[in-house]
Figure (cartoon, rainbow, N blue to C red):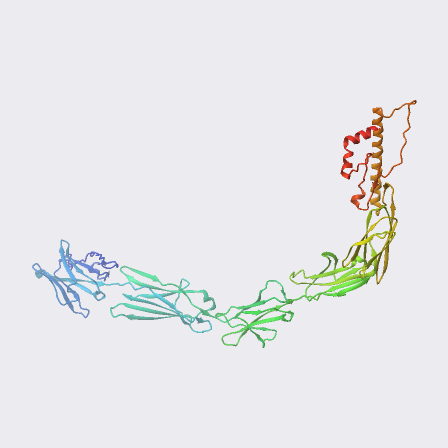
Length: 628
């Protein structure tokens, strides 16, 4: 019993000492208020100290109105009563401030009233009491949502989740939250069911069930529960983890689109149509084409159409039924499969034309898109558009003509066709002259060439008079031309006739060759331009030769080899040239036609290179100086 002043009968219970024991991690605290206020003592402890200044005996209430003494002391003795709940658990110490009661290992059953009683004999008796309260924080709350989800079609609140806390004292409380906002019970919307269990050791376990009427908007909401429990002088809380509850709702909107390929679709492509609705769980999708009664085989929300053709074009539908099978939701999309048929060329394959004839060829390819047509011959563009005009056909008109048809908006679509044109007619010999006149030094061999075009391919024959010594040295032909070459030895004048013929006609070319024994021979060129060049070269060489002779005469005169004067004037006579003097020979070969063979005065032969060396710059200057 705590006695502050017996005369005024005021006994104050001072603030008791807080004892911390490390045997367990829970804090040990004890707060005692003035006994006169009669407010309960609040404790959260395993060991507790109760201090009293004039302690005579200490009793506690048995809970049924009776008291049980647990300790007695006087000036002679101190006794801890046996056979009580506190035997072996209490200890009383004394000091100048008074007596202190230590209760070890506080239990829930220790939440009772403790009395401090003083017997003052002549002064009388007095007592005061304090109420010891014990607190035990509960375990962390555990939340669990319904596994199968909740349908928004339920008209009444459905179970969403349950929350449980165990082993708390005094009884803890549970509060529900949705997206961090507390849920307040509301009829038809929110309902909370509480189940409290008192464990064998005296602890409380509380289970709370949340019933909630879900909406489609709740599909992303998070639910959690909070437990609140008392501690000495305060209220503490602990939040559970949050959970998301599966919300079931029917499909109200759908979307159907072509997932692949991107862009336009052509024949041969694999097409994927994808259907998606806003229902949860995702419904079973039914695909069909124009006829809803003819469903197509699909893979979930995807319809695959392999190697499509133009027949696959049309309107495709995707539909679902709600869980009740009453409301139908559908969506549709139009699929267009583009195509390009093989090109059709008229005339096709092979076409014969006569020389001078006109022809119009056409190329067409049926397509679902705009096309572009281009004509090619031997890789070069020769026409644009569906038609090709071939006018005034010649042998050069013959060949393979290819039309390519493309689709600019879909480059992967393209096709082509071709026609082979053959221009038929009589032979046409190369060269513009019907007769070629040549002159050659007797004893030499001359090669004569003849080329002819025509269809059918002409054959070439030779008729040679004036020479028995000739032979055909080359004969070849291709799709367009026949070529023949003969080698003729010129001993006398020769007439060679090239005859080209087919079933369309005949054409001849005559070579007239004059055998010459002259020392100076100029062969008639076969080309006017080449002949002019040869004549110019011969004139220049003749001028240079005259200048050279003049320089020789001038040199002999200076040396005195040729006397000059009226009395001693000698006449220089010019001998007729012989075959060993000067020979100028021109050949048909363009390289050789410009070569001039000169024989020196002493009869030594010089080649073309040696001849060029004769006319070095210094010699040329001397010649020009002598001429001047």
